[in-house]
Image 1: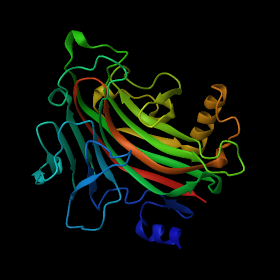
Image 2 (image 1 turned 45 degrees about the vertical axis):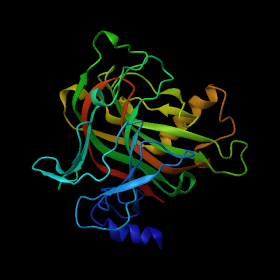
Image 3 (image 1 turned 180 degrees about the vertical axis):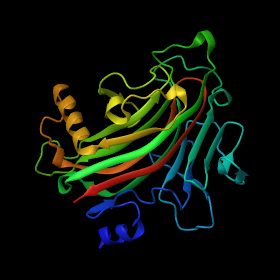
Length: 301
């Protein structure tokens, strides 16, 4: 029944046998704005941002972690290019009629001082959603696609800039979890990085790599940009088209984790996808504008 309802909701974007798995991928219901600080690890809704007359409960959150202020109560503005925009002097979130979302952050107006240590908190401006778990083992194919571009990225740090702790990154992640109770790795989580802009790399080069997320105490496997976008130069400000074979990407992540001494008792079909986030992470003082559109996670069961 659930798959039938999804097919009825998205008839133009799917072919026979496929289902769209993202809830409200165009965010037509708007977004819930969360407070800059979580309480006991849980985000606190403080407002709802609407882009039209739809008043259904939003299925996406807008997070502005570690901002000193938030734009709760801001009245929407109409812009010929951006569409309906919520903005203050530090950041903008907007959607136009073509479904293009704009995310602006002027970190120079948020940071009181440049970060001096890798353990210092940094600005996150992200959209996120959770959904009924997508059991990878029940899918024949699983394809993530979207488009993104970076319109501007200005380094405001001068001589204080240090590439080891400072960056501007426009990122996307899927959250996956081993849900096979027969496995010793049952309950283990992993973030799967599915495309990014990093001011320190023009894009397209390198290999996938592992890192550790301090905030969630979880490993991250970041795919190589070339495996998401092909060859791309984000500095040209053009749209980059992402296409990710998620089953293959999870396999690559598990291989990397096993080589690192973890997830020894895990296979691709053991995992469930239960969420995504996307947006800016700014461990450096940068003023940035990015756009995205056409989120889709399609499966052939």
